[in-house]
Length: 376
Image (cartoon, rainbow, N blue to C red):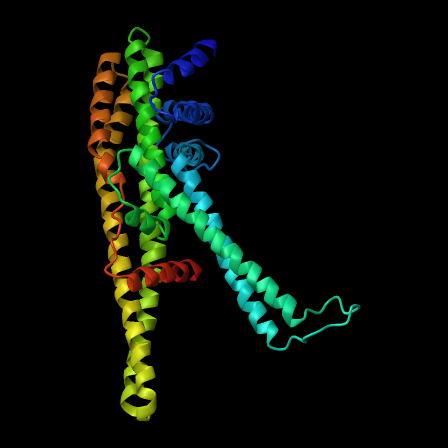
């Protein structure tokens, strides 16, 4: 145990830039989980593929246990300056949404509010007190917007520090997209995995004369690749089974509404036609933006699928090599190839971010994000 603790310290002596201390904390939490998962990999090679006895250990039950441990690792590896900035933005957005909802309730309540209430009627509110509360909520929302703008600048700086080629408008897309949290977590996990993998390669080389220690480091490397695969699978699934389904529902309802609106334009009195035509233009904008949104999500899904394809082959050969327990030299060579592969697919971690045609489409994009999130 003392040797392992010493080596954990070594891992982070060479980690570069300002995130070193935070990455030490991340590794401190991830290391015991990966160690337990590596023991699971060892066990997996010596159990049957399947068993009729639910109490008997087989590869399926071992894989389930490993995946549970890796899910915990994903939560920890997702910690970064970017994720903290995005979380802060989301909380402010949620607070602003609550402010708007409360203000809407108060405006309805104000319609029947008395100008004055008696002192003992403490459960009642007069018009002035309601107006004051509405103003406070509006001020709070304005302050939230200012803080969000500052956090977007901070998020832009953090993404550029990772070498990502993005501008402020693209980061705004990320902030107001339904996959924003998923994208930031994916980027954060990937970069933490890349840093740790690089150091595990060095430690494997240093453990050249201790094949069991080298195998242990290589097992951790193998599981880090599996973490990325699990993360990518979840990302693709959410886009297919949640977001694209909800967008399709929105488009279907809007197209039905457009058809009814066209019928009204052709059948209602002339004095109402300009209103229907205005509504029709807004409905058309919603459909166009929703289709653009679906295309945006599909492109990001393909980007993740391409990254997953590059990693899946590396994972399979790494797992097979781990179970075969080849010499340390072979392990080092394979880890070097894996590091080169991670370098090649680094750019695939940057989401395809939209540059909007006009301010109306940008506004509609944000509205659609709220609608997609609210559908169940």
